[in-house]
Length: 600
Image 1 (spheres, one colour):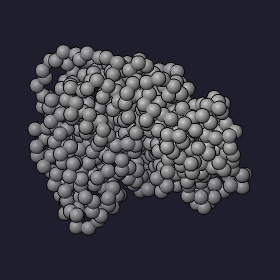
Image 2: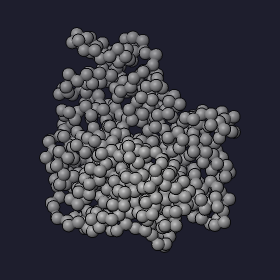
Image 3: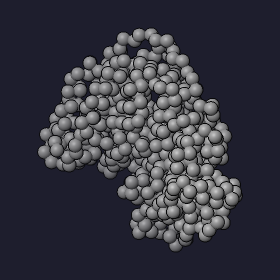
Image 4: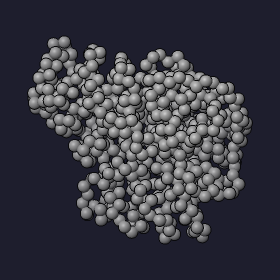
């Protein structure tokens, strides 16, 4: 395998030489439009998506630093041809522009052969909260069907995509926005699964009892039995099981024991070892314990259901909830509630840092979180939060922990005596896109010019704020690049390549000497570049030239994949493509997430 350092340096050098050929974001057909509103969280059962906004745009407010910048050449605008607005129908249900959706023209110019293939290839789960938010927005927007899409196929693909992401609440919101008569054929099952995953099991049972369902699909037979069991219809359950036996259909030994136990036709199982949407729904209703190993193997949608299930042990809910938060399926406030709900003895809290070292999982982070929340002295609180951040980073849960801990950081006013804790405060704030708080802490450590440790911390954090804020953030010139690169360990450090690639994708291309040094590194780890990355790069350029925004966004998500830290070339291709597609705010949020998980 060739070194990705060599390939990245040469590729970006070529990119810099041909910057004038690159395309700029498509020009809106209707003139200047207001920026997209925050994407609403899917609401409670029975409601359209509503509630607190999910804002992808970084908060404004940081003071710009008017220093020289090294910028890539600005691409020339493409020639725009006016096209009529597409017609919308029931398959176009979803979030409109005011609710944060994409414009109705999202898939205009894209044929179903390409659009359908791209939607099917979306990474599931998306991998991080910002990627999940972008994928959900792509699937939830009220947009016209791609050209040539067969009746029902677009809606079916959107529902399947949301369920694959694990977002049962969003899938259920989409189901409720579509006339019930249109939830037929192959769309009926994903609609029923959306209800089970989205807290609307009654809607799923209603669908199962319709006369036109396909009873040759065992899913419907099992769902009917589960719905009858939940409603207490023991005789229906007995007759239904007998009918399956007479037809030679086996619903599964574990399921049979579960449904019989739920209505008193037999003993309840001691525990449930395998989870699917139907068995999870029935087990939670019947109070049957769920094996921790089953939760560890569970789908993303089931993780979110388990995290919200008050009947389950808090330890199980916490383990599931932290994983769900990493995927963007529950928010920081919900995870904070799970951290706070874990029973912890006063002895563990009194020496939380040492205790967490003996507990590498979510329970160790819960102890540190509780200790920080109870601490009133700012320095001691920050010490515990910083320990929690490091604990979570090593445990692969940094973004989840940051989302839960960010409100505790906001309660503390930055001051010079707290400067040693600024690096952790900056990263925790950026984990939820709070660049305003992060910039306050970065400015603080910049006020200690004689403190080498503070200067090193500022140099290390500067690229994170540059990714989040662009030109409104700290300067990114040759001197800043050199200081940061030296702190990362030079070209031999893996973080150097991914950091430079992320910045380059957003317009901050470092000077050629940095890339030449990177391309000459003979050591360090190697990583294969997927062959598709090159094709995706050029596909995004072509889609930008033809103003096919849906293709640009989908291609970016596919290029990123599910890896927490993708290959630098994949990251550059994806984020540069989003920038060309007028999704710079989303690109910045994703870039910051990648940088944090890479250890920047």
